[in-house]
Image 1: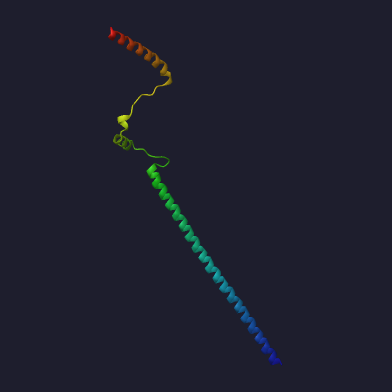
Image 2: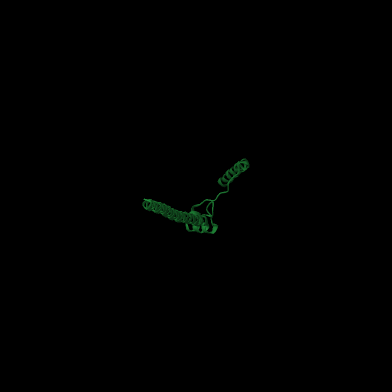
Length: 129
């Protein structure tokens, strides 16, 4: 009886030890799976950050090219290019150039215009005579 009891006790200890080893093995495997998953998540995050940074870099390059072409906030006009393009077109041939008048000068110009009209009329009268 005593031998059977010690045999059962040793079986019980072996099964308990096997169960504890199996639990520790399962925990270890789960830890490894979690570590692999975390590493995959880090890799995916790094790839996502890299793609995002590349998109930002491409946009900056596009904007810098546009800024270089357009002078940043607006267009950059080169006077020589404008004059050359206007010279090629017929703009100068058909354009009439006049000096703008100020409102204060309008009264003086009106008086001068009246005097000129009177002078012209007097000149016409003399020619007729």
